[in-house]
Length: 390
Image (cartoon, rainbow, N blue to C red; front, side, top):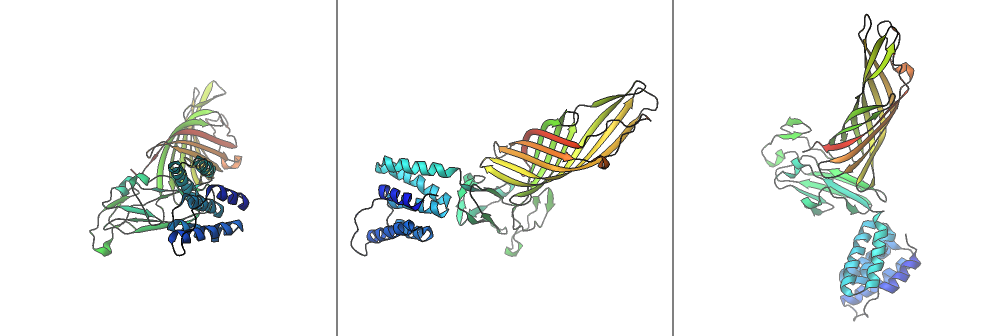
């Protein structure tokens, strides 16, 4: 945040206005409001100064007033508004032949970019195909090119409304609380509006065919499927990993993460025999999603592990198979980088702790226990992630 003195110096350098017109003229009123807004800003009263400058700009769209309003909005914490106004100043200054003002506005806009919060409205293909579908954010209509785009927004509540003829209206409110906060709202499939006498159209939602799709007042679960290759720890082995996840709310979600070791572990036993081990792990995850950058999504949360092992003995009498299962608790993490609307690059990681008492033993053909498990289970994998709302 700039100090008020520095702002006033900038206003004096970059925001000169024409001489006042006769009393009652809109330009004269604009000038009076502009001067009063500067004085309020000097006293640190940004909340009172910004409305004065905004009304001055409405009466007379002077570039200097626009620059002053951008500074005021930045001090007030409305960074998205300030950023947009700085960009408009840049365009105006080019036309006006004011390189000093253009360069100053460009620098200030650039400094704000890393602090901007964004809101993205995701519209699945099945929703977009509804005839007459419309979506608005804060009473501003959003056309298809603006969907699934991270749009800078000011802190505070933002209302998203989706409508279509013969469908129930869906609405939700998202609160953007801080700086550099990035949120996504997914519009669900709109339920038929039977009260309006519209025909009941069967809808397919979350894989279930229903004639009466329920009206949901929050973001719909956004399901994704990730498939990747990686390694599992213990005996380091290449692994195949699959994750099915769903965002239940704006920032919270659940996932099932499975992993299968692709190389078999082997152990020699007395008598010249051999035991081969196959392992599979299923993890039930809960997570909170963060967006440290507009194009990055990070998830962190706890998980519950269930592991099952199968040992196959060979090379001695009474050889056969034995099974072992075990439990563990730990943490999961993930990182997604979208490449397009249909695919993202995904990284997955899990670390779990399984005490000895939570895992059974593998006793093969009276040869004693084999493949004693370690207490730590680790998975690191990466691959593509696909949405399941096609």
